[in-house]
Length: 411
Image: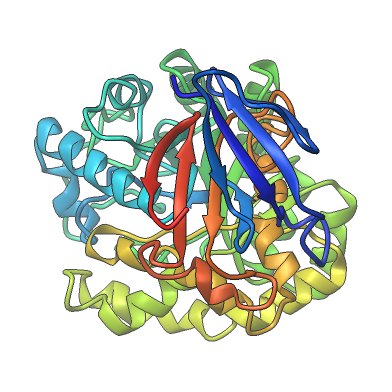
């Protein structure tokens, strides 16, 4: 593995409102080895000078679905596993080329897929997973419509399925244990209605309190945590009371609930870009009409929810939640959030805050000795022009993941 010395790195990591003074970084054996002044190269060190550019930790997208190669999730479930696997590899490679060196999958990716991606012939991001999301009958990820009486076995093993259906405390516990048995890092529960599923209006509450509490206990037993799909204020408040700490979406949150969530140590993960693109592109890419009709229920409150959570002191991680052909818009979340939030806060969402949510502080989301050697070099200061992080990585002159160059142009 290449020994890399990056000279004159002005680090932008979301922890300060200005770049840190220029330093040198030495990357070797997949890790950041040193951060300091005038570091000395070895005989085989590749020296890179970034004096006129800006260095960020590898970006983190904390809400993706890498197996969702189609926006129509019912059709996605019917795809053979080999097609899903290759599709996921291509989706992840494109994410890495946008500067996302770590992604957290919120339903669908399995431990087996993660192992397969470690053998990928093309570079892909580091993958953090919940396995299959847990849903009640008729909940989000139950893709059976009102006229579909086909049975579900409760634990679906198709790779293209984002979730499993489980009802009652014993089934929830079994499904939770199955996810951890097969390699999950955390649990995901569908605790509210959703856009992409046919039988659950947005206001529906998913699972009973007893079922949610059982999932929280199973996650705690495994040394992990629970993330929940949530939109309405009632559902968010109930989830916080039940001990859920990762609050996904949160478009309809109220100020009092946001403050209560912040006091409880929760982290939210908004995903505004997905509703923006579902509204403009959903029908074209195959989203069913009933799902398209639901989008505005949550889309129109998105920016307001960011302001509410920010004022309450509720930390927010970066999430995109895009499906199928909409995934190229992944980096659009930066500019959407920057409409109402300071650039530092938006950058922190994809670095240090996301690392805290993943429980990977000191390994990702920062540039410090012992962290993974994940580095992004931006052509412009993102604190002044956050659009440099948008698009397909055009504003990035270099991307390094695990000490290996993924992109090396203009440095």
